[in-house]
Every structure is written in structure tokens, then in C-alpha cells.
Length: 615
Image 1: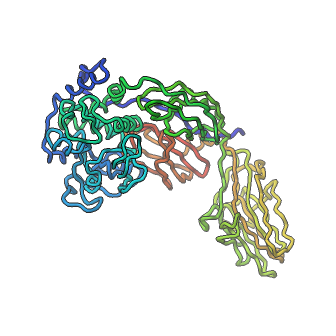
Image 2 (image 1 turned 90 degrees about the vertical axis):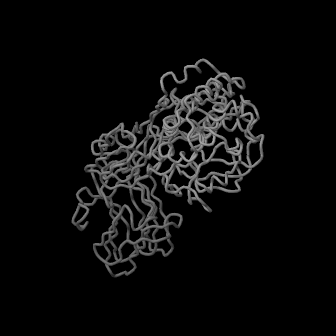
Image 3 (image 1 turned 135 degrees about the vertical axis):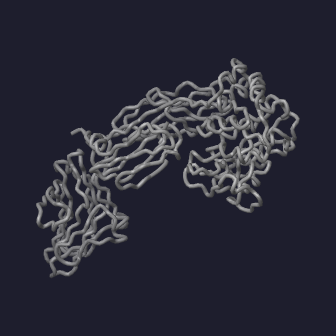
């Protein structure tokens, strides 16, 4: 049989657009540079209804509620949100407002991303919900009126990883505040809004290391460089789109750089850089597995700096990286892929493709048994005592490389010992091919042999002596000679593919009057996965509905198969969740953004990856 586990690989590209009123941006069409910026200023000033400062707390109930991460209805605060796990603390709308504070988590207040000291706390800037956001009081105080920037050596770090310290980029070395990567693009686009909405006022605002005193460019060179990087590296999210719509409903104007993120470069890079970066050179393969290809390349160069590298697989833009090495994941086994890389600079210019390379993933390998006895007594084997009280028992050393192992020590010479170490569950050999067995052994003292056997009729419960056991082919363990010095033996990739059907494996120890201390470790039964495994698992696990609407429940119906774990990956291959399961399962999709995901299912019959689309 040709046995292969197929991993699904798919790239979906596209853009999400906010609910832009018809004709809203008509007067800006066809413009670039500061002419575009001035046109946008007129558009987003018209209709802007200024509310009071206190009314922001009411606005936050619709503009800044966590419907994206924990999905718990708490205040979504960019300075405390942990996008990859539980938040360090949460605030409830209108219940945890500051007041006094001394520590993170005491209360939340209103953070002006452009500090209000710069514009004298004047209206309508003071209460503009497009850039005045909810924030933990303590973190807001630590940020103070410092510019945003990038910090390598922080003097203070918040619980979610936001940092305060000296700026590490060229052009400025003063104290700056760096938010986490998840919200850098959000903040950049909010500040571009400020520069546009208040174009006619901002040149007269107070001094700031972020501002150059002009009404067109607005930002100093070092700070503009950072904002352009952040806007490029952290694209518009669904959360930003929803927030833009909510602020529009609240105060009547929009952030154009969320509706049209390409306008950032059209304004601030229109006359600065139109030259593409150099082509990434020397693209090569550093490692290949059945589901991953690791690639490396030489850095490209560009006058405005490299923002990212776009990686193309079979002609499709698949993923982006800020590094010159990347692991492409979720690939299909035994499949050839053509790969090239393009450089993108901070102005949005794109290079030509690098040299194209081809790589073929390896044949998929599954471990039917993979037991190192580190979590003894929870293991893939069950000790069965037929005669004597010696039994197999867990030990914390003397295994391979002196690691934990399992051992039997039948040291009473005249007492019969008949002990078995049997796989807890049977292995269906018909679902696989090229099955190979490896294990580590150590033995000392007597001359009692250890035999590896298998049975097709053992029921997993009765006394093993009442069933038929056959020696495992191509496995012949050494017969101890009675030495008191431990002898190690490694069984490496013994071919046992001639075994058919669903079978139990067992280590059989029958003392012959000269007991031996046997140690067993690192038992691995590997195999290529059968063609039939995908159909088999698919017939026993139903995942529905798919596509599923964000915020609704995804169901997994399981029948006659042991679903052990579920791993959820995003499109870039980043693992988002690891779930241990038993039986049917439901997953609330509210915590995930809209997009494509991979659901990797591990069962007692093999492993399979399904795609999931959240709409």
C-alpha cells in the first residue's frame, strides 16, 4: 500500500473593507501626496460631531469591547490585552473607571495617543474617539507624553509586554513607549488620522519630538519612519474595521487609513521613494520535513529600509517575514513546491522575485508507538502479572542516556516470574506501511531472555497466556550471559511491515530460574501513513458548520475513534490552541479573527489536518 498523510495547504488573499458610505471619498479620488491628505481632511471634518470628554466612556462600550480575543465583553485596552492567552487583568465598562491607581489593573481611563498636553487639551481633539482610547491608568501614566518608538533595553515593561525606555532606531535616542506588535498598526493609523483631521491646526501645536512643525508632512523623519513600518507590518484587522464603523456611528466621521490603508503610502511616500528594493539573493533550502520547508536568503537593501519579505509558493503570496529565514508550514507530504521571495520596502515598493527554488517534502511519518516512559505510569503500555510479584515498574534513571525507563528485576532465583508489558491499545497495521520498530534495552545479571511478541486475538483484558502470541519478525534481542555489568542494546528500525491486522504488542518475560534485570526505554513504532487514513478519520469525525460564522459554535462529532488532541493553527503556521479532548467537542469561534485556519486532529488511528474558514 502507498501510505501518505495529506496536509492541506491553502492560501486565501483578499481585503476586508469597512462599511463606507456611498460617495464618502469621491472628492479624494485620483489624488496623491499632500493634495490627497488635504482632501481627506475636508471629508473627515464634515460631519464630525464633537462629544464631551465624559461621553467617551459610553462610546467605548461599542468602540472598544473585547469581541476578538477572550470575547468576554470586557474593555479592550491595547496596553493590557494579551492576544495569545489570558489577559493579566480585565476592566468592565463603566465599573472600573479611574480614580486613583497605584498598580496595573486598578482602573482604566482615557489615553490620548497624541498627548493632550501638545494641543492644550483643546476640543474637539480632547474627546475625539478616533485617537482617544481606553487604557489601564498605570500604563497610561507610565507612557505619559513620551513619543511612541522601539525599545531594545526597557526600563519598565507592562504585564502585556508594552515597554518604556530609550528609542533604539536611528534619529532619536530619547525615552519612548513601545506597544505590543498586535496594535502597532492600529496606533500608527490613528496618528495618521490625527495628522490629517487636524491639518489646519497641528503646525501651531506645542513642541513634541514626534512633530516637525509642518502642516503637511507633520511628523519628524525618525518618527514617520516608525509609523510607516508599523502600518506596513501590522495590516488592518477586523477589530479596526469594526471600531472605525462604531466611531463613525458615534461621532460622524471615519479614519480613512483604515478604509484605505494604501493612502498612508500615497501621502507620505508619494514623493519620497518610488524605487524598488534590491532583489533578495541566494535563496536556498536549509531543512525539509514532511510538512515544513525552511528557507534562507540574503537581505535586500533599500534607501527607506526593508519592511518585510513576501514569500511566494507555487506563484501565490503565502506568508510574509521580517527575517531572512522562515519555516513554511502546513505543507503536504511528498510534494514538490516552487518558492521565491520578494522584498517590500517601507514605502510599499516591491522587488522582483529572487531566484526560484524547488523543494520536495519528505514522505509522511507517523509514530504508532512513541513511548519514552518520562510520564510513567501514564504510558502506552500496561503491565500484566501472570505469576510472581516482581512486575514491571517505572524507574527515574538507567534508561537511554540515563533517562526514566521501565524495568523488571526478577532477582529471586527460585521463584517463577511470568510478567508481560503489553500495549494498552491495539495497533491497526493495515492503515500503514513501512512499519519500523526501535527501542533501547539494558540487561544485567541472570540469563532470562526478553521476547517481543504480538497477538491478533488478545482482547486487552484476559490473561495473556490464553491467547496466541507470535514473535515479532526481524527482532532478536540478545540473551543475557549472567554478567553483573549492565549491557546496553539498541534496536534500530527493525522492519515489521509483514504484520497484518489489528494487533497488540508485548514484551514477554518468563524467568527460567536465572532472573535478569531488564530495562526498556524509547520504544518507537514508526510508519508511513496509509492512503486510507484520511478517508477513515473523515468518516468518523465530522466538523461542522464549515465555513462557520465568527462568534458561533464549531462542532466536532466523533464516533468509533479516539480523538486525543486538537491543534489550531493560523494561516502563517502559528499554533493558537492545543486542546486535549475526549469525545464530542464544541469550540466557540468568537476568540478567533475571520480567516483561514488549520485544525490538526490526532487520533488513535492516525493524524489529519482539516481547513476551517471563519467568516
